[in-house]
Image (cartoon, rainbow, N blue to C red; front, side, top):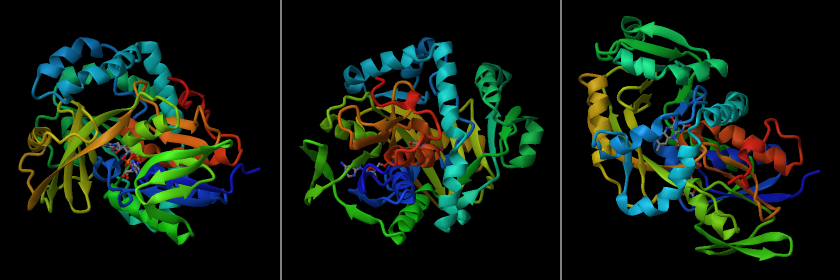
Length: 414
Ligand SMILES: Cc1cc2nc3c(=O)[nH]c(=O)nc-3n(C[C@H](O)[C@H](O)[C@H](O)COP(=O)(O)OP(=O)(O)OC[C@H]3O[C@@H](n4cnc5c(N)ncnc54)[C@H](O)[C@@H]3O)c2cc1C
């Protein structure tokens, strides 16, 4: 029995748009609300990979030893706005406690339970949206420019292997057969043949949002500023254009979900882990698949309009001005990995990953209100996990058994 006849999803990024589509699949009347166009925030500028090999959390054992040096090294990918340190400190303490080996193993297992279901929940939506042309199925290459970097990654790849990720080990020459433009310094690589990326994540979300509207869904451009409550829970949203009544709501507003969750009485430890990209428009450098350079802490992805290089984890308020030196740093690393990399135009972008200290999203009912659902906190994997998150939210709303155990993702676990 469906609990609600209609539902409103706040946030039209990858996560919210997929929630809206899966809720429609369950027969609900769905409204999608965003203050911007669909797919224009973090879902626009990411590195475009459906990261099915990313069960390994970003925080690994031994990180505590490395953090002080990394924060002082101007070429390190880890950045902290010092004025933000007091607010971020409790988050960091929780994050470090999750880097113990047993916790890392548990987190990897939980992440993998979602990753296994990515394509069975995503591909039917992509097909129905007519967006298959935006997908590239040529795999992912992790590159190593030193034996030391390769040895240091052994544990991470062992976790992937034990979680069923298919991998091929290559030497530098074999890697360059897949990617002839790679620097000669690459001595080893690990290829994930089944990994898919999109040529344009922002456009993919827009195509999914068009599908949502074509199926009869309503998309409103409004800024949600708060909620109205009644005896049954949330009864309305306060927006920049007046109040809107709701039967039920899904909070899928990326990093800005923290404030909306607080308005619903829940304090969630959601931090902005801001990333940067440099886009080489119309680049002549041939990049065939997605690349992650383990030594350089960057990803490189071929897009439909050039080559994108990105990385960096900058802890700062989500809407604070960007520090473009970070985009310049990823640019330099990209140019070293692909000598001669250039573009007819070069642009920079910054966006905020919504990150919890245990590297797992919140997927489930709000701890305080039965007719509110949380779908946020997907850190480095929101593009990837949007579709399975949407499926799980729709199952919850439709009172169906979830296709993945929701226990590790409970919003009240913090
Ligand atoms: C450099 C970089 C590389 C990345 N690479 C990858 C990758 O390769 N693969 C991957 O899976 N993930 C990647 N990610 C992470 C991924 O981009 C995010 O996890 C994902 O985009 C989050 O999606 P979302 O829908 O939750 O949030 P968003 O895309 O940020 O969408 C949130 C939406 O909510 C709206 N909103 C917020 N507040 C309100 C409000 N009050 N009222 C109305 N609307 C509101 C916003 O306008 C926005 O449209 C990367 C991130 C970065 C920064």
